[in-house]
Length: 102
Ligand SMILES: [Zn+2]
Image 1 (cartoon, rainbow, N blue to C red):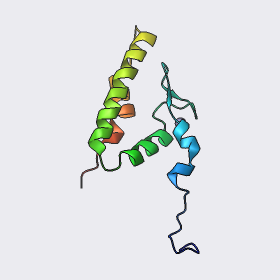
Image 2: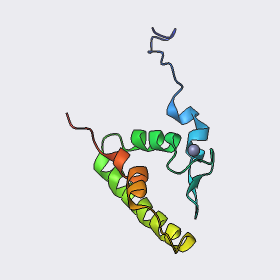
Image 3: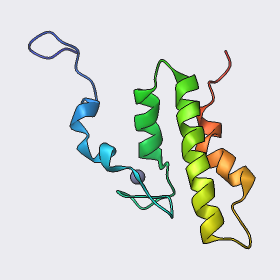
Image 4: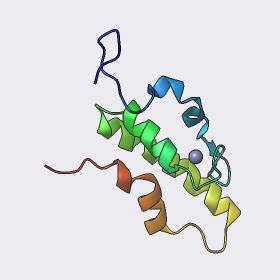
């Protein structure tokens, strides 16, 4: 399907029009999303980051490792007795950044 000007019509609007996506940023020190209050990175934030780092997943992983470092520090201050769960932190911040083989 094409628009009257001949360009393809997509089901979703251009990412630049999705203003709310850009509000899905972490609120520290709890690391909850500023827009949807879910654990950051929420699904919207992950989608935006994947698009932003489309051609450079290694850089995405490095960026998220930095976020993980900051979050770990915040969680250690918030919960000094129990600390953060390493497996949960890994899944939340890094696991989804991996490039699928094949
Ligand atoms: Zn969000």
